[in-house]
Every structure is written in C-alpha cells, then in structure tokens.
Image (cartoon, rainbow, N blue to C red; front, side):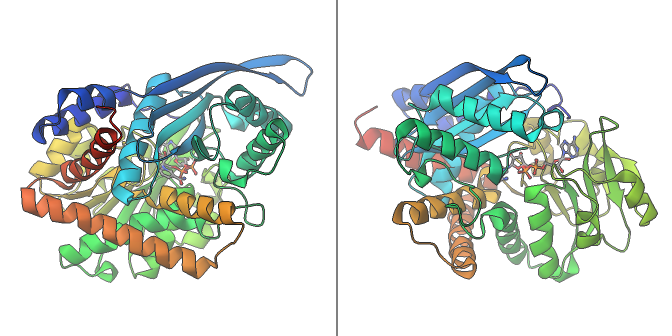
Length: 429
Ligand code: NAD
C-alpha cells in the first residue's frame, strides 16, 4: 500500500490549527488543550495465526477531544499506520463532528497491518484483540469507533461481539458501520461518498455550473470514491479517470477513458479493497497510466478519495488549468503548500472535514437508531444526510464570504469556535 509521501499529517494538522487559532484570537488555554489529543492508547495485539504461530501487531486509539460528546472516528488497517497519523485523524474528527453539527467529539484508531496478507480468521483475531485492549476506554458513552481504510462492516461486527462478550449485554451503540440487520444503518455505505457530492453540488451551484456540464477525475476506487462517482453520475457528471493501488505490482495506476468510465463495469473487476484488475481493465479499453496521472487530466473537478498528502507542492503543479473544484473525499489529501497553490489559482476547495463529513453524520444516525432499536428507511437516512451536509456547507460558505477567507479556514473557524466554546462552557479552559 502506498505511503503518505513522507509528510507528517500531525505536524500539518497542528500547523493548520495554530494558523486559524491565531486568526480567531483563541485564548492560550484553549490553544494548548486543542492542539494535542486528550488521551492516547498504544498497545500490542497478539494474534494466533493460521499456521499456529503468534504474531504481535501494534494498535492505537487516540481521543482528541470529547467536550461536545463521546469521541467518534474510524479504525484503519494499514501497513504504514503511525501514531502521528492517528493523532492527526483524531483531531480532524473533532473538527468534522463540529462542522457537521453532530453532538460528538473526535477519536481515531488503527492497527499496523496489511489485511491483504491475513485470512478472515486472522482478521477476526485482530479485531477481537483490538477491542480487548481498549474495552474499558471505548463504548457508547465514551468513544464510538467506525470503519475506515481497509476495515469493513464485518470487522465492526466482530468488534461489537467481543465488546458485548466482555461487558455482558447488548451494546449496538458501541460501534457504527455495522452490517444492516445487525444494528447498521441503511445508507451508511453510501454516506461518505454521497456526502462529498452533496457538498460538491452546492459548490457548483455557487459557481453557477451545472453538474451535467462537468467532468471529474478521482483518486481511489474504494468506498468513498465509488459512491461519490455513483451520485455524481446521477447528477449528470462524467468521470474520465480513476486511480487506485495495485496490490500485485505494489504500485498505483490511473484508469482513463476519454468518453467517461462505466462505473458498474469497473466495480465488476474491483476487489473488496478497491483495487481494479489491471488486465481486465485493459481488455475493456481503459488506458492505463501512472498512478498520479489522475491529477493532470483535463477535467473540471478533482476528487482525491484515497489517502492523505497526495496533493503536494510538486504534484499540484500537474493540475490542469481547467480544474475549478477540488472536493476532498479523503482525509488530509492536500499539503499546506499545495493548498496555497490551489488558493492562488482560485480553485474552489471543499475541505476534507466538511466534504467527507457524511460518514460521521450517518454514523451518528446509526448510533441514534441503535440506541433506540428503531431503524429508518434508506430514503429517510439519505434525505436527512443531504439536509445536514447542505446546511454544513452553507454555514462554512457564509463564514468564508463574510470573513473573505478560503473554505478551509472558514471550516476551521466554525469548528474550532464550537469546540472551544464547549470546553469553555464546561469550565475546562
Ligand atoms: P478504501 O480502503 O475503501 O479505499 C481506498 C482506495 O484508495 C482504494 O481504491 C485504494 O486502491 C486506493 N489507493 C490507495 N493508495 C493509493 C494511491 N497511492 N493511489 C491511488 N489510489 C490509492 O477507503 P475509503 O473508506 O474509501 O477511504 C478513503 C479515504 O477517505 C481515506 O482518507 C479515509 O480516511 C477517508 N474517509 C473515509 C470515510 C468512510 O466512511 N469510509 C469517511 C471519511 C473519510
């Protein structure tokens, strides 16, 4: 799996926080509290492998802030996971929940592993082992995990089961992203990708562009990307290029079709980790380019939906003059240097913790449904999601207009303002 190209996401997350904290003249106590996580758990997870040996994995849970409600955030399985990546992601979760206006704080977890190399039984052992290490520190009223990169509803169900065994009862609200019928919410699978496109639709409206007259290029072909493309196509847009990681070659490739990709055709040749079968794609007439070629396509919209730090000072130079909007489906896909270039070029950036807040918003809906043991229809979930995402977009856009700042700074202003107020009101700072 690819790395985040040598950048430290936590350094970036703190630098972004410091910059906006200065601009809104946040007091020193709140600054100190919010630029670091409240709590961190680092642990070892021993797993009995299929060959009878024991392998020990490194696991993390970081709780950045819970002033507005229990922590919330995904668990990633990734061979290059680091404590600093998890810290950064937990901080961004705090801002995301505040921007989406859901009553939750920020957390994130991870295990250093590559599930490609693990059997389902070994993955189950890893999930149960992760819960055993943090079962006293997560739960419905403390910290509610969810799926993220390379984790699935099945992983969440194993985790819930282990938690329920340890705590002796049913606690479906301890985790979200569960399978539908086992406490999961309808619409959760689509939620992040659709949420990206609800905000994209509003941005295009502000720019007076009809989605049906636009084209896009996308990095990633996993959960976020596939559903973003699905809804974008339903609005009439055309995707010309997607890129993804090729596990066999240990490299990424971009798949390009000038007349537009066929989403279903590509889904049919994609594995459960979002990897497209290169040989079959070539047979279907896709041009196969280097992994970064998604960046330099002549399109109106870029959707980075894979990993952090993909738009860098160097790679951003490859972006075509035609690009008008970047909607960040992934967490932290743009480095500050690249962001400055996007601003100079007057490209409308929908920042990650606004654009991809659909996942956590639907996770919040799932928690509400799980706690009530009453489950909503898919249409109800998605229309509520659209309302929340649209409102969040306009809250941020109004601040951006009023204070004449980029959308990212405006999103930080909204989020940091709400979290700092909660800390102050509780008497913490
Ligand atoms: P996923 O594991 O389902 O898919 C990831 C995709 O990225 C795969 O197609 C993989 O092949 C591709 N990829 C990996 N490295 C790549 C590279 N170097 N070049 C091109 N493609 C590459 O993950 P996901 O759930 O879709 O998450 C994607 C991003 O969105 C992550 O940053 C994640 O933190 C963020 N996110 C996910 C959710 C969610 O609900 N799933 C919510 C919010 C944010």
